[in-house]
Length: 147
Image 1 (cartoon, rainbow, N blue to C red):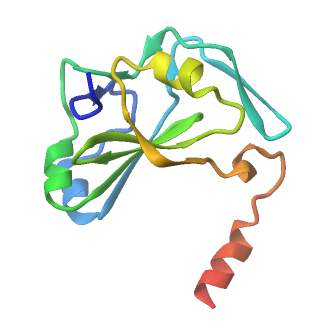
Image 2 (image 1 turned 180 degrees about the vertical axis):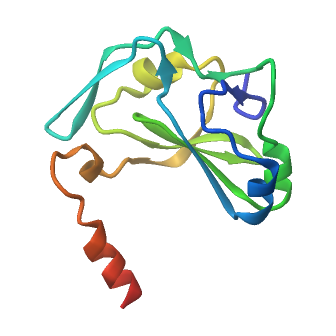
Image 3 (image 1 turned 90 degrees about the vertical axis):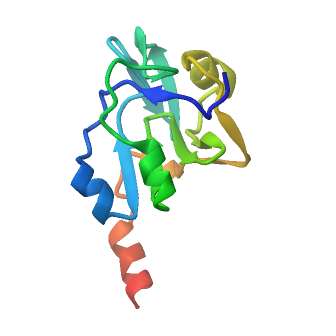
């Protein structure tokens, strides 16, 4: 199954219909799998110590609480951010846009999805600062953007 027909198990924070109408970007943040997931970070590399039992990126769910088609039809950007990957919902389907340093694309991402996403031709590494045990310098970054 391609990434064009998929659902995400509702462990993500629910977004109300009203929130979908007033924002241009919707970002869901959660772990990639659930129930038993253990990770380690060493030398700015993410390592899966124990994979979770349940996949969250699946082809169907019992209840839909977020209208992805509705959001896309209205030009909203929809992102799914996990500890190991970032996906963007597009008209072509769910696109894998970024992967964490240290993560094996096949073993740690694709084999833990119940469908195959579209893989960006420009697949990027997630910002390594996320995986460092020190401040990311965001305040300085915002100051330069404002200035």
